[in-house]
Amino acid sequence: MARGVNKVILLGNVGKDPEIRSTPSGTMVATFSLATADRQKDQQGNWQDKTEWHNLVAFSRTAEIVRDYVKKGTQLFIEGKIQTRSWDDKESGQKKYRTEILVNEMTLLGGGPGRGEGAGSTGGYSRSNTASYDQRTPAAQPDYADQGITDDDIPF
Image: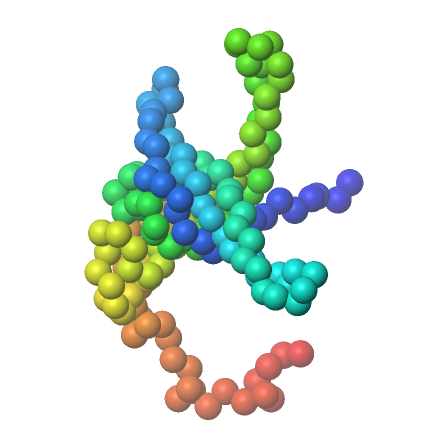
């Protein structure tokens, strides 16, 4: 049977300061909301902004990065996967559902709260990257212009 794909990519702003807690086993968990905006034309042909809110959850080292660097208004680039969990409400006995994005990779963008505006760099953190906080600058990106690569070097 073929495998499915569950991948989410979001670029947006944090709606309120993240909530940080720990599980009984000691794993740190950060929960926060992210707003993404889309533009659509209404029936009169005018552009209207539509905001979509996403519930995000980060664990372990990613949750620590969220705790230390993410505040209301911070612009983030997120890669993760969708998960819907359910539980029985203790008061009403009804089944409740919540759809969330489990954060796999996160890049802090812009100069949101607590970060210098115009600093000229973006910070990035990937859960698969065990280095704590990776500051990347445009100068750190390799430049292959002087290598003399031509279309003949491309294998397809």
